[in-house]
Image 1 (tube, rainbow, N blue to C red):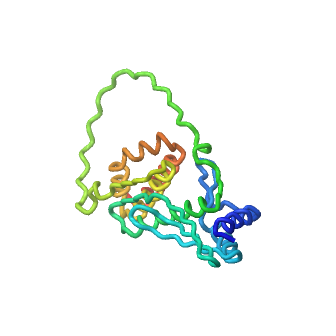
Image 2 (tube, rainbow, N blue to C red):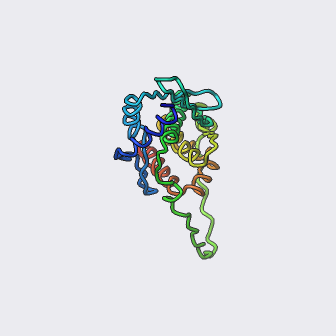
Image 3 (cartoon, rainbow, N blue to C red):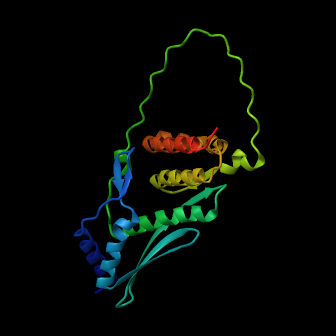
Length: 229
C-alpha cells in the first residue's frame, strides 16, 4: 500500500471520529479546532496503519513530511512561514506562536479537516451616524502635558510587525502578538504605548475583522485596569 493510499485511509478513519472544537471566539461567535482536538486521534490512526508525520521549519517554509513506515514513500506538505516580530518580548515567544499556528494548519491541510470560515462569522462594520454639529463652546483650559516616559518605556519598543501571506493568519497573529506584548507590561503607560504605536495595525484589524478588534479592546481594558493609578 502506497503512502497516498494510506493517507486517504487515515482521512476516512478520522472522519468517523466525532471531534470537538475547544477553541471559542465568543465575540465573532464561532468555534475552531485547536491542535489538541485532533492531533491525538491522528497519531493513533497513523500508528495503526503505518504512517509517521514529522513537522520541521526553516526561514521560508514550514513542512509536514508524512512517511509510509513500510515502504519509505513520502508525501511533503509545505506552508510559507509567517513572521511575528514583537519587540520588547523574548524572541522565543514570537517563534512559539508562529510554529503553533503552522503545525495546526499543516495537519488540517494534510487530513482535510474543515472548520467554519472566520469571514462567515464576522459581522460587517456598521457606519455610525455622524452627530449633529454643536454650537461653539468656550475652549477648556488645556491640561498640563504628561511627563515623558522613562527610556525603558519608549513607545517604539512596543512595535508589532506581522508578515503573513494569508489574511486570516495575519489577524490571528496580530491578536496573539498583542496579547504577548500586554503580558509583558508593567504599568498603564506601557499599555497605552502599545496601543498608540500600533494604531495603523489595529485600524486594519478593526476594518477587516471588527469582532476580533472588539475582543482585543477588552484585553487592553482589563490589562490597563490591572495596574493601579
